[in-house]
Image (tube, rainbow over all chains, first blue to last red; front, side, top):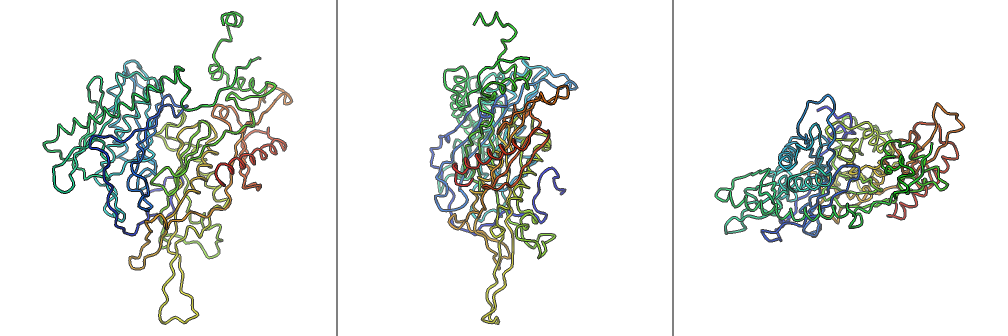
Length: 313
Length: 327
């Protein structure tokens, strides 16, 4: 492949990620209840130069490096989202009666266990398309004819796709791609907060939620868990929804795997998961709105601006 | 309120409107006061206080988040292995130790601005000129200051003693592989002076970097790494340089007398100031040693102004020393 001349490239010989000597570690186990969501941290207004922005994080559950290993067993999810616009379309663009919404999802090169490239790959573009359909159902596009808005998401740290035991890298980096569902759920919630921060009219807040059908340990039946961490479970099927609670509508649904008879239950639990993340979303938006109207001190602690001056000449 | 509105009806625009309509006179009005204050509320020589967090990314060998006012930058350092046998043009014997890192290209810094950090850099396009120049400047400064010791980045193998070896003979030691450090820098929020923030992030991330212990496994004929955190070790870094950027605002115009022009040096400019200032100075210091001075555009910075810049740069150096050892 031709080297990217616009970036500084790896040495010509090519590099390989380090291979670790095998150890005996067990995959982490879920400590939460099946219907308990991880704690969500969500804040808006982190990028002042953008029209709207939000930061979404699922802090790590277990204490990292508890077993003295270099690589953590699970990872947290860190997503930043900015919204630019609405801005007028260029003069030479075709007429559009609606707001044109563009979404970009990009993982940072250090977001996942295997290093990612700088150019968006197909999986990232696919996430962008999913996100676009999820958001298009909430934005009232008719209010901005002849304009466009960009939703830009950078995933600083992604969810694991499965349990990567030390020395298991050889078995293919991405086991099933379950992690991208949690990432997309985070993207939907963060993008919704950023859209509100940008002041783009929406019919409702949209929040993302994931549920998974997981194989039970030992004997016993499969169970459905809300907000699965792929490293902790043996996932059989998973479902993601983008859900508008007050209208009881689903703008995006994505199901993978064979759920068998549990299909409807799985969907119901995904909706439940979305309502759980919605409560965090509502709080974050409310807090930001209160700060804007001056009921509170600004949350991002911006430096005070200069005093008025007289201008002459 | 009503009185002022009637007395000066034309001037009742908010500050933001003036800043947008006539940025240069707006900045000049601020700087011309008896006690010059920039629109951001800072004095001309006042630096923004950096906030540095390290080690928050779990998939990097070292990472840092730096916030400089409204500019925030994330840097992740990741080590990968380059086998010595796969280097197409191995460096000659006469390449000095210091040049080895640059010669093999073991440091790969890249700055990404298309993360939605500012409306000027929207994604979907190849890296802009400024992003490419930032990557290049960071790379060349990394090599110029010869921060890293090549010993830290080489993985060598000492052959076991064989029976037919004399008692005085030393076993052969060969270099089997090198660590390549990918230094990925993402600008999350941009409000001017990305270079200083990115450089601080790189320094903090390199300080935080811990490479696993690696050895050549003769049976597998490959490099193995120890998964235990206790075996990993940090990099031995020479004293870390700090950079300080200044923008020069000048009222010079081809329509005016040269003597009428006034100029101000603004330390650590924000995005608004960067846009109107044509001249900029970057000073890189390593202790009291000047590593590099870059000056772009304009004839306004004389000897005195340059001395003042260097003095301020050493202030930034001290500020960073206090923050976290020698970040």
